Image (cartoon, rainbow, N blue to C red; front, side, top):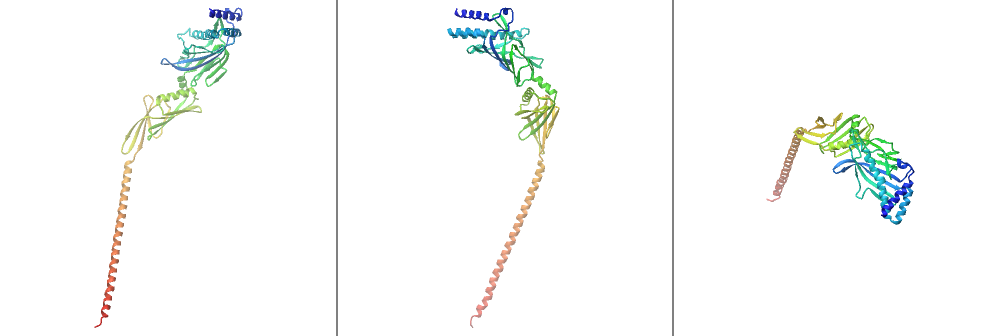
Length: 404
């Protein structure tokens, strides 16, 4: 009973603050909340499907002096009831008004919005008469002709309170878009726009948000450029090194990211990087290709196959030749002459010559050895003969010395 009485009292107090005649339509003089909206857009996996979602964080600070005084008075009696009434006020005025706006934007289409809220509900009271509303909205983008991603929720925002429609005023609206997506349009133009983060101030609208489809953006870039590919093969490591250059248009972050994704999905590189160049983009990478080797007595032949992410205007295969197969398949042939037979003949000749030289050296040494032995033997014979001669000469002397 006390709860119903307090709600009724709140209604009476607020009605006294509404100017006469306001119930017949909009009134722009009421200022109930100070609202700041933070919106982050991203792709999320929901129930196994990848969908575009907008995650909202809305800060609502009660600024209506009459209602603040009323809640302060109520809090002195029962703070829990006062907090609950404040949460209900935020839920009904801010959250429900936002839901009505979203559903109203889809009323003329075949789409329906799905809103996900935290387990404890969308409204959380953070401090005295301040609250945060959190929820996630899907779908946030719809595909338009394969060229654009368009947000269907845009236009003037309104809130209904006590049967009266008011502008849904906010002090600051911050939008965080994916960095790798190019912006087609934001209406009205934000006060700030840096790295796909846009900020508006003092409004009562949901801005028009339209992005380029990354694939369409990449097609635009490729159609405006000449594409050159240089490839080399390292047979020792079995790796292909490639350098793809696109010349003729400046590459945005979206184009760079989408192009690298295309290379990764097609070539499965071990490493890859991109570098912006004047009026173009350069992609450098290393790939583990399909390799078959054919060896013969005279040569080694490598057949190397890699799949390209698309067509190139000019292809250079360093140290080899190539042909294009179906599905942008690059088939390369590298050949290296082994010259084994020449090496074998040369080696045999070296061995033969070395053998002859060694044989001659041994023979020469053997001859020198025999000559030395003969000389030594001759010297010994002469010496012996000399010794014998001396003895023979001395013998007669010895005989003469005998007396008759």
